[in-house]
Length: 246
Image (cartoon, rainbow, N blue to C red):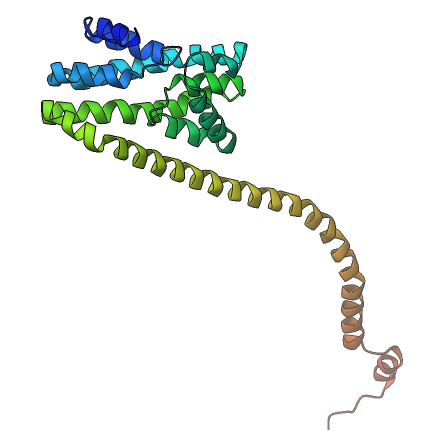
């Protein structure tokens, strides 16, 4: 039945791609990837246009999937897709939500699992949209570019290698994001330490200055005493008879 729906949508061409990609992010269990490949085989010259339409529709459907998860929880997923997929996605999300969305954009797991799960786990919708935009763009446009430049021959490439390419890209993106996040965290910790140390140093400085002031005054007084002429010597010098010049 579901494959029959996909075939029915394929008769609408671009609009069928839009509808399939839109509901793929919400409720439909068959990924839009399959319809994109089918339509791209029929007309490789429109492959990039198909990728663009599918990409936009997916992003438009993402907030709706998120809202379903927020209202109904992740239990609704088990009625739509395999329980195994839900469990795997949940484990990925708990480890790193951003990486889960990036990797989920390329895996065979339907994307709705990640949109609904994001809402159920109260993940930020703006971060979901941001990382979905990156991951889904890569997936849609890789397929589009292959068919646009290689035509129907791209089908063999996709069947043989695309899964590995997708997984490789997903892992690289996830590692890169984890590295950037770790680096940012270190910077924030360094800034926090500096802000914590500054008030302490500011409070210590006046105490050190106060301790140094008496010693400085004693040094200056001692130097001035050295340069001063004793009073009795000055009196003797004034009263001493002057020698007359012959």
